[in-house]
Amino acid sequence: MTEIPKNHPRYESLMAREQIVAGVEKGMTSRQGLIAQGRGEAFDYLIGENTTEGAAYAEAVAVCLLLLAENPVISVNGNAAALAAAELVMLSQLTGAKLEVNLFHRTDERVKKIIGELKENGADVVLGENAEPLLPLEHERAKVERDGIFDADVVFVPLEDGDRCQVLTDMKKLVIAIDLNPLSRTAQTAHVSIVDNLKRALPNMIDMIPEFRNMNEEDLWEIVDAYDNNVVLMDAIETMKENLTAKQNEILGIDEDSDKNDGKPDETGGKRSGNDKRNAEREEARRNARIQRNAETARKVMMRGGDLMME
Ligand SMILES: Nc1ncnc2c1ncn2[C@@H]1O[C@H](COP(=O)(O)OP(=O)(O)OP(=O)(O)O)[C@@H](O)[C@H]1O
Ligand SMILES: CC(C)(COP(=O)(O)O)[C@@H](O)C(=O)O
Ligand code: BAL
Image (cartoon, rainbow, N blue to C red):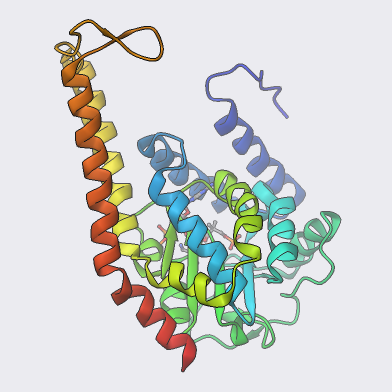
């Protein structure tokens, strides 16, 4: 393993690479997983390598859904096991969700190794070894356990493929996905698409659990019902556009802050101008508008999900 100094500007991302490489060396992660991580990194760069407001919102709704579900299952693949085995186990213990290994590049050996890794991190039972081809798919992701993904009402699929995501939603399950690519078929198909790095999303979700754990079901449903996945996807794409525009302006030497100083000191001791204040107000208004739009259109998407669950 290459020693990565903690003060390296790309520390987190380089460490994740080391984890994925270690996962391949242990026989848990596929070599294709290295490429998938690279695609994720590219989108992470565009989103600013931070959890956006929209992603945090999706993470909160995902926690509510996992707490509401009767038979929630967390689907684990080779990348997720390499990046966050301990967090997956913790999330399963805190929400009562089962863990099931489900692989695209499936081999019995990899399934066993991933189960072993989850157990080493404290998991008691991990499904996946007795999977049968129960999903209408012509590849290995069709193999699921009857008591696990097949019977689940909510399936949490960190790093998922669009095909299975579609099939699971067709089976009237609620699907939560983590995918840094808001354009992927997975992100577009899931009911809750968390456009965030798996390594940030899982700890965030674990931290949120105490906030929601003692809420009654009605209040949790209210949060879920008010959610609109389209707003979250739009927000992720908008953030990427804004980041690209800011970089473009930087290259062009356009100083967005040039006319902002009118001499008023801000809380950091610097200067804060009327323009600056107006920009902050505009940003606030824009954020409120997004949330407003969200509230207005939310019911359509998640109520539909809620109805499906009731059927
Ligand atoms: N660490 C990570 N955190 C979050 N997302 C990630 C991470 N690593 C990879 N991804 C995303 O996971 C996805 C996994 O790759 P995969 O090849 O299955 O997607 P895909 O074929 O593009 O999916 P789809 O069928 O949904 O269009 C990629 O879209 C990538 O952006
Ligand atoms: C590499 C991976 C993201 C995961 O593969 P597995 O661990 O076999 O489910 C796969 O979905 C792919 O896109 O190639
Ligand atoms: N994204 C293609 C393979 C899979 O994840 O199922």
